[in-house]
Image (cartoon, rainbow, N blue to C red; front, side, top):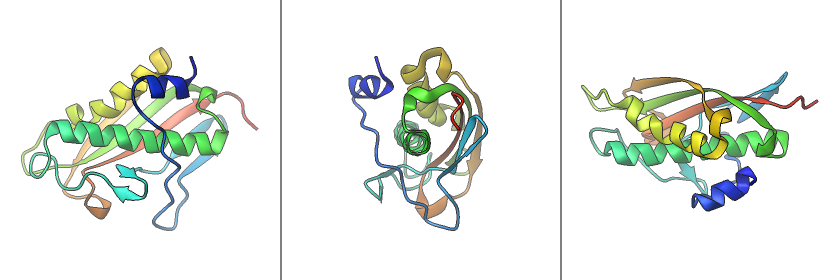
Length: 155
C-alpha cells in the first residue's frame, strides 16, 4: 500500500505545500536528507488552530494541530522529491508548543505528529524528537513542527 493510500485509509488528505510567509524556503534537499522549515497547522492557507495549549486549547486539540503540522511537512517533502515513497527514514521531528504558564505536556501534544508518522511509515517512521514549550508562535499557532527525512539517493 502506498503512503498516499495509507493516508486515505486513515482519513487524511495531504494538503498542497504551504507557501512561505517570510524570507525562507519551505524545505531543502541536502544530500540524501530533506529538511523542512517549521510548519504550522494550516489548512487551505488558513490557521485551523489558534492559541496556547493549556489555556485556549486542550492537549487533545494540540495533538490534532500537531498532526496537521506534520501533514504540511510531508507535503513539503513530496513537493521536493516527487513522492512520499522516496522517504527511507524519518530522522528527526522538532516540535514547538505554545504553552500556558506551567504547562508541561508538550510531549503528549507532539505525539500527534509522531503517532501519525508511525502509522504511515511503520518502522521507517521511528524518529528522534525534541518537544519544546514556548510562550508564542507565528500567527498565534499552538504548534510548529520541523521534520528531517532521509530519502533514497535522489540527484
